[in-house]
Length: 218
Image (cartoon, rainbow, N blue to C red; front, top):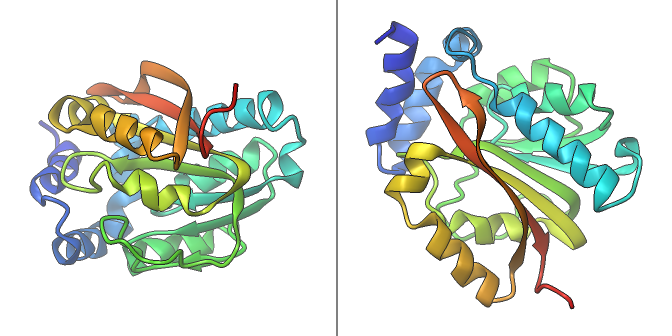
């Protein structure tokens, strides 16, 4: 296993502990982009492509008119891909201040916030509600629990959409699908589409999920 792969795997045993994750990413932030690039991290490009599909096929709007939240933005890799797809109004948040500092240097984001823990039920950090929320690389082992979907739903405007990735090993090792069904039953989100076992990182794929705000309408 390569050094970069070892570093990535080291986070999978942190059990969503925010203080441990913060320290982990503070230590890793400067090396992060190079490490994930060496492991062929394709999640940001995949999620931006799905976001564009949602913009064109569900929202039926030009991407530049859509306000996007990059939840768990890290160093801004997904934000860069979103910008390349034509999205212009992008905000972001992350648990790690150090990762947000690097994301700010990309020039992609209008607003950024750090110290946002999706495992803790709190009011949204931004007052805005978003047409589209993307969440890439967050639902992975040792990070955010499936219930974090409910926190993300709170950022959506009426008629808005959430696009989220789940690394395959996370999907197999968590109750994500059952939690997703419970959140649907509660009326917070409804599942619109899914893309199974698609490109994510060299060692394994991910499932990508598209949710709409609120209950499904007939």
